[in-house]
Length: 276
Ligand SMILES: C[S@@+](CC[C@H](N)C(=O)[O-])C[C@H]1O[C@@H](n2cnc3c(N)ncnc32)[C@H](O)[C@@H]1O
Ligand SMILES: [Zn+2]
Image 1 (spheres, helix red, strand yellow):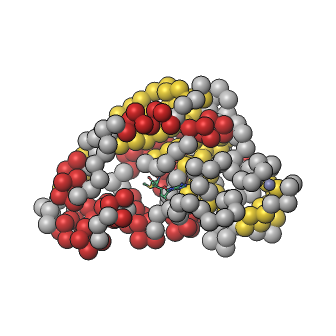
Image 2: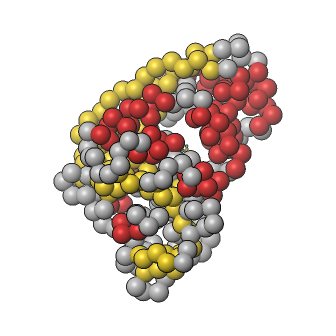
Image 3: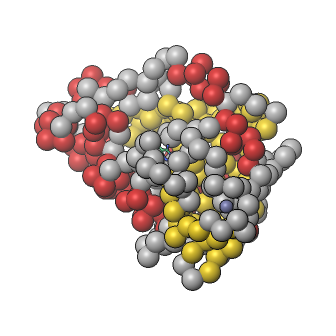
């Protein structure tokens, strides 16, 4: 937390923050706790309109990612960040458990990571994920608790994103947003049998609309097949939005009805954007 503090901004008044005795403070008198588990609470006052992933979803995500099914994606992100910078701050928006950010930080001593998410169970894991990774509770739809121009890289992997704020925090000229989004083929083999929510083919259009002020520089397809067993498939369903619509036991039963191994298509685009 100490190392990223100079890049943080008060979520109420945007002033810089200083860290002392487990509290982040701005010059305007606003104070924000750093939890015993290591993550800061950088939310504005009042009840948040949205909450992050539940403990059960986060446990499923952690187990699933831990088996390496998305490791090729983590490597692609790591290479993409290496093409942008060797040092500075990498902010992961809705970064969850810190899985991708940790991969990006490994063996790159000049790089610092900041994982912003709303889910406390995810933040607890993220805070332990890497020594150069700081985690903070923040709503990515609100002004980000990051100083203007302080981010060399912003990551957005399967999460909500806020174009104007990404643009504000990126370092002018050189800063890049690296965005991972599913294509309609993503997890296609599981959509029917598990009743997963299919990727909306018009999502790309909506995405562009939200990223106004950012200009696409590159787009790479990352496509491969992952061999998954019943536990993997069940976790995949339980970690995503389907967990809100279908009971956990029902999702596990649907996974158990599949063949022992299923070859599942992983199909995403990895795009980089510059502030326009
Ligand atoms: C599909 S998960 C992706 C997590 C991570 N990027 C990954 O791929 O492992 C979406 C994440 O967004 C978080 N989230 C949802 N709404 C949010 C918001 N408004 N602000 C911050 N995080 C949010 C959830 O808690 C969850 O961790
Ligand atoms: Zn303040």
